[in-house]
Image (cartoon, rainbow, N blue to C red; front, side, top):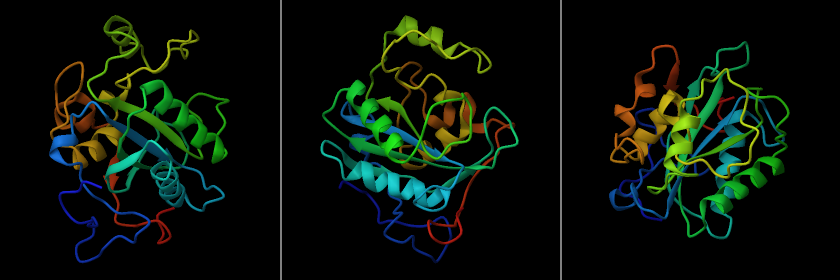
Length: 225
């Protein structure tokens, strides 16, 4: 593990338990071709406990898989559903995984972990036991720049794409999502968007006024439902 600082909590004077350690991505890894950034989210309890407990269990599962080395982990965040709905608030985080796997195999591993936690993909924008999104994988732009720009310009309300285009990286909505950009900026402030070259803090969704998102001090097993 390549960490620049010891794990710390968002709450002064307290340390996070071993289940949720917060550590930034080493500067040399923040734009490394072998580093994949993964966003985690959940707003329903699972067999692992609260939504926060589920995220902690998912991180442990991913870190324990062959081919993945956990090199960064954000604090836990609380966010409102996007698009707005009457669902419970989400718990969110971003992790960095150093891997020699290609993006399609990383995405397949994320979907396998989701299924193992009971996630089904029946309704778009539904409440989730666990959501794992591949946000970026080095400087790759897939399927290609033209298709990526078309997908990124598609409004949220549009039907989900039906054609199989394979992995889409960077994630075509990440630049608009505060719940992704805030934890990403926390652990990788020098990361650059592969298309626009902007840091997470400089992307439009970071300060989106209509997306409530806050870092929370509660930790898995201690009331972070």
